[in-house]
Image (spheres, rainbow, N blue to C red):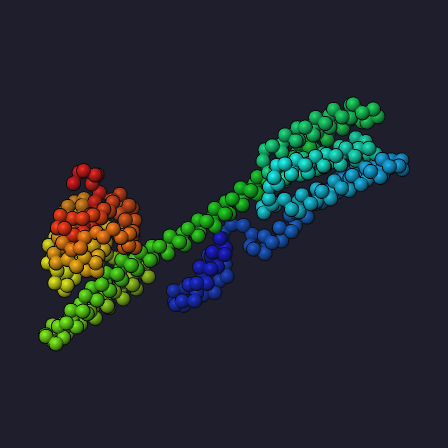
Length: 401
């Protein structure tokens, strides 16, 4: 998330300095949760080290083995305690923490079995104190398996702590070790689950941030297409008309050029309005613009003269639909007649042009479909009664029109 924040801030900072306080505050758009990056890196090192410190509790079986009579049992027990400490340290350093990975079940079972063998060997000279190693076996199981199955090993270890000293002659009972086994196992299991959930939450927040940026990009692209596509199409039509009229009617050509200039200024104002979020699209304005654009292209048009019957919640959607339909007629249809009809719940734009050609709908229609979905409407494209293309935007159910 922090990476996304810095990237977005950096991209905007490279543009107009009036739009964004470039590099004025390094914490801008930084996440409001969790330690900064440097603290996280420190914790990735300090956290495992704190876990490895737990191995100091193996000093009890080590001292018991060291105090036993010299012999091969003593040597084997000391090596077993040392091996258990090393294996536990390896587990903590490689599989603990938010970035630790779960070991494959068969490999984990073999590894834990090896630790149990080390615990048994430690008991050769350390007697009942060697069973302290079962605490480390249970904690290792939590880190390696990362699921509730690791808690079953704590139950097995507790049974062993209670039963084995009573079966071996000369051993003292150490029933209080059961508490240590359960406390250590459940505490570490709860900690790993908390770390895992925090990690998942962090990833979810990162994904939400990325999706938000992508959605904003799509919105900007859609608005740019809807605004500039229509304006540039009309400008192109008028410029072409002016070029044809230049030798025939200079006054008409001059008037068309002046309208092109006005349209270019209007398009620039629309872009500025979009950037500052002050642009407004009105149904009456789009109807007037469509009538003017069709007149300039010498297309006979039947355009409604009133918008009173259209409810307020649909007026903006119908305005965008008229803009998109007008652009498509001017660009693609080669039509000579267009008919725009409106009812309280439906807008229809028909032409007598070439009609649908089976191509995939463009960005404008995708954007219009998204806008319609937001107000509970739908967009349909088909061949119309005039023989050309029909653009239908409606909130009426199928079959109700």
